Image (tube, rainbow, N blue to C red; front, side):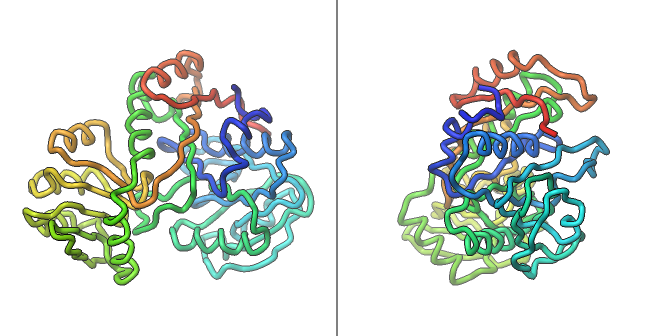
Length: 353
């Protein structure tokens, strides 16, 4: 299946989803183009629900702020909703009616909830914090309770906490994110294993949830052998890796980290040795920022990985464009990824303008 066709609605099971995020393996993976293909497929299939679009940070602008390359714009149909910064509204050729202001301020202005009063293109400049993304969804659903909430991007490693923000995620693997097809296939397989992690045992999950509700500032929650729960409050996991590692006791069973689970953090845990045989959990699979090599190290130490919120991962999209603009063989790329991953893999197809 090539993207942008009406059948994509069925392939991704969009009629069964409340929300979906498009996550790239790295910068310039092609996630905005994939969002456009999903949007176009919904339009062509006469999808009965209103789409509500936003991004994590800024997307849909003409030029990529990182590389200077041209970025695809995002198409909206009359009646659809968007959460975007007021500074972006004037740059859209779709006519937007502002329905509400969110109180969320960004570099390009306060984020507004808007409805398209004509079809056209828009620039999405959404929130970057988990609680702000949740607020945007809540305000969008106030307008359209049954909307399909589509998010361009996922929380980055700077986001302190947040997980389970969308019900499902699709992964975009671009040749801009690897030196070879083999490397991209291996990176993709590692990311898929993280995005599809199972939920922790229900009793542990409920205990963790209760601890997080009682201590919103907790960055780590630990469950001991007898079910005792301890929380570590700190401004961020960043810079406190050793403190987390040294807080583990011999009988501890589960460590939940709220925020980005990075290479540096996992390295501190493995070096201290206390994590051996434990379950290491994050809020959802998008919060792990670790390589296949680190996954293998955790496995050798008998560390199980789990999440609070399980994610659905209906498909992977591949983008053959390399950093220099040349194209890899798309069919060979799909084949390389399919050899390691048991999921539908779609060729991305051209950018839509």
